[in-house]
Image 1 (cartoon, rainbow, N blue to C red):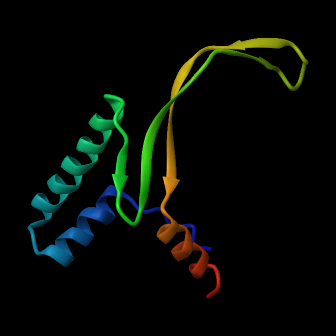
Image 2 (image 1 turned 60 degrees about the horizontal axis):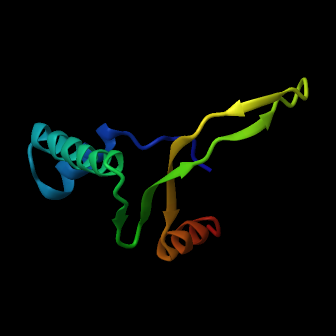
Length: 100
């Protein structure tokens, strides 16, 4: 398995090569898309990208946790968490990549 991480620069470079925008325009386009996705999530909306997956926000209630080292009970505050659910097409594509 590859240890490489896909970065914003990689995405903008790909847009530059595939679409033909300038490098600056490509970087701005990627930034705008990521900002739009982030803003939607912050406002509580789900973001569904067809054939890729769905990003959504989930509210988790307060609960009592336990320190595994000491066994001491510790309160865990309520919080919002980001979740991602991949589409079936994405799951299949990733699974097929493992067969190579």
